Length: 85
Image (tube, rainbow, N blue to C red; front, side, top):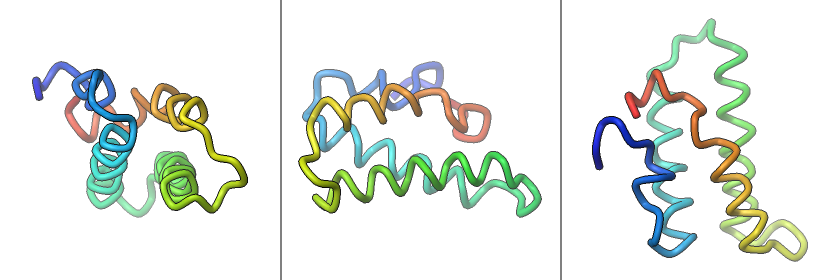
């Protein structure tokens, strides 16, 4: 992956589940790098991670590819300064 392309764009064309898992791993690493006092950023990342967890494990009633795709697109620039992408 290029440093100038975020993982959501870099994995375009791959299966949606692979893209979601890649983005989830990237956000988990970003969360580890954030200082404890970055509460807003941490909360935003945690919400997206919980969304991925729910969608990828089938805990959400009737999860759809459209919903997973929307979460990917909406989180595309989240933690961009931390992940470097």
